[in-house]
Structure formats: structure tokens, C-alpha cells
Image (cartoon, rainbow, N blue to C red):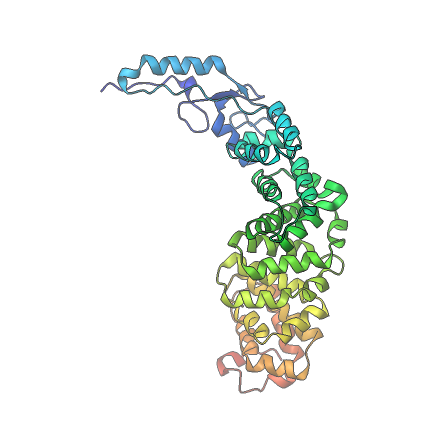
Length: 407
């Protein structure tokens, strides 16, 4: 069969394949819609892949003339096995989204309109961005807030569940996430907390994942300082229930963003976060999850309440010590930092003896012999010096490690 040479101007500069839906961006370069949408919306780039110039607009203009040329060329070369692709459907418009949102304000049409919005969002990233620019995020947040009063014995209404799933599916920009924080004069955060309290497993997962995204986008310390005890109680509950791996990581990240502010460490400790984290660490081996748990434990143990909770757990000190040199450099540094906090501020005689009998002292001596970061070594050395008198001559420390004990 004779090889067919595809005209070079039919080729997408990104995929190097023939374009099916050519669109032109603000720099005048034409790309296949799917590829340039992925470049702009999924990868969050704001430059032209070919010219490297900044985009003055993210509007994609259909290159209808080129598409027709390509389709005609495919028809002419059908005998060579070239298939003519169908004319692509036009992308959703802002007017369509506004019409659907208006219809969704009617009780009878609300669920149908929400399902249509969800279907539109699932098509591609361009639809998601169109929905965001039309104010869909604020509208969906209002549905979640308003439906918080419409409860039955099993939890929230299905319209709230639908609105939440769309909100998460939209993968909002940072500006969009910040607008959610301000929705309903801050009521949206409280509504998400109620979802975590009484919603279905799926809704609770969406709520905590959305909360995590909002916290990452926020630049307002006041947001974190104003979080209520109930927020920590419900996020810890999501953690404990292990709804899904994504929900677990989102819960850990949300708490890690919140804990450094105000009295949030104390609120997290009082919500039972330490006990849940220790229980999860006992069974967890996934690197990033373990790192997040140790980061969070370190933050909470900077409060007296957090340290007390760790020491009250039968496996608290043991699991923290066990994770040293077994997770990652970050994991080891955080675990040693936790032990350092315990040694400096909560080291009763019984705690000092427990650390010795559990092998914590031997592990710290081992840290001084291996590569694990200067900060970790400095803290390990400091712990050993603080308790040198009861530990240095103990038979619990193997002879090969005793030589590392700092004098």
C-alpha cells in the first residue's frame, strides 16, 4: 500500500497527530482541542506550547476552515484506509450553564438540572472552566447550604449529594476555591462540617476532599483560627472510618493545614486525633500516608494535650520509634521530633524507662550511625544527652550501638 503523507498543517504541535477538532489560541497557533485543553486546564499552563508566549486569553476559537479541509482530505483518501471523523459537537456555552442554574432554582427541576450539570462537567476540562466562569461554584455551594435544613432520618437530601459531587468534580481554580470559602458569609465550611457529621460515606468523602482543596488555596489565617471543635471531631471521624484512601489523605492534609493555627492542636487532640493516628500508623505502610500521619502527630504533640494523648496510648511511643528509618527521611525527622518534644516537656521517670524498654534509646543511637539528615541527628543526640544518666549504662542498649552514645 502506498504511504500517505499527511499535510503538516493538519498535525497538532502537541500530539503530532492529525487534528480532529482544531482550535486557535490567542497566540494564533492552532492545536487539537483535546490536547490544548489538557495543556491549559489540566496542567494549568498559561503559555503557548509552540511560541512560549503568555496567553492573553484562554478562549479557544474553532478553526472551522481547517477542520473542513481535514475532513475533505480524509474523504478523498478513503481508499487508502483514511477515515473521515465526524464534525465535533460545539462546546457548552456560558448561556447554557446560566439557563440550567436558573432552572435548578425550581424545586421540581432542581435534581434534573443538577444531573445535567454533572454530565456537562464530566465531558472535558473546558466545560468545567466554563461552568466556573458562569458562577456554578457559588450556585452549588448555595444548594449545599440551603439543603442543610432539609434533613431526614438518614441524613441530607439527594440534591445536596449531587451538588457536592459536582463541586468536587469541577476541580476549581484557586480563585474559585477562595470564593467558596466566602460563600454564605462563611456558612459553607459549617455546611461541610454537617455533611461530615450526617451525610453518606460518599458525601463525607467529597466534603473532606473539598475542604482540603479550599485550605490549600486559602491565604487567610483567620479561616483556620475560627475553625470549631466540631470540625476537628468530624474530620477525625472520617479518618477513623477509613472511607477511602483519597478521603484519608485529604483528612490528614486538611488537619495538617489547620493545626498550626491558634488552639487547633488542642482541638485536634481533644477530638481524639492522636489515638486514631496511632491506630492507623500501626497498620499503614504506604510512604506518603505515613509521612502525613507523622507530620500531623508532630504538630499535635507540640501541645501538652497532644503529648498526653500519645503517652496514654499503649502503642504510642512504640509505633513512633518503629517508623524511624523505616518510612523516609521526612518520616524519620518527624518521628524523632515527636520524641524530642516528649523528652523535653513530658519525660516523667516512667516515660524515660518506657522509652528504654521499648528500644527507643537503641534506635536513637542507630540514628547517629547512619545517614538521615543533620536535624534528625542533632535532635537524637539532644534526647540522649537529656537522659544520659538513666540510659547510658543500661544493658538494654546493644554494645555495638553504645559506642555512639554522646557523652
